[in-house]
Length: 249
Image 1: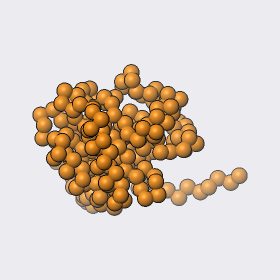
Image 2: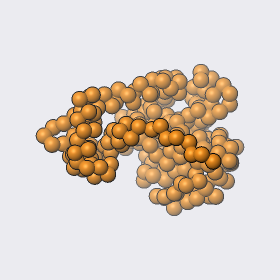
Image 3: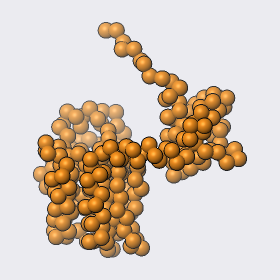
Image 4: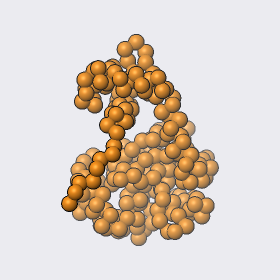
């Protein structure tokens, strides 16, 4: 069969790749480091970098570049377009105020969850995942819930070429390990356990359900295990808040 034409713009892809190079580990980069990261010559990288700088997406000090505020503006436009973000903010803040623990809200993209809101606790020991962070869905309470809403063939498709890299011994190490957990998660309606990613953190997650019955997001209550105790009453409270949000979706 004839191959579908590829209409993607290589220049645009290079520019986006440059923006994706910056993260917590690399908040600043030199031109040569950027060129190496996207596998082009320094002269080619310079053309992309100059364009991004002039359009307000990068800023430069001496010979080092970093993301400019216009990138954050794009991120917040995305968040503002989500019903989940807009509707969940005030209930999440209220639950944080009531319990004293951090509340996160996330959505599923591919095999990862994206954190779209955070009501941060003021406790000394606090669970703190910044907005925009991506974490593997199989290793998080919210991610497990969102995956549990997918049919088996969709799970197979998403994880076809996925490499499981569990940090904790209690995390699933394969799709075969994950599937029975998801069946239990779906039947239970919540997920609560110690974090597979952050030592000493525990969380309780509940789904945000659309009027059509689909999981469109999830929220969790997170804190240090010395302070947050997983009790039936606290689980019910998280579920109640999630249900209230779901009624407005």
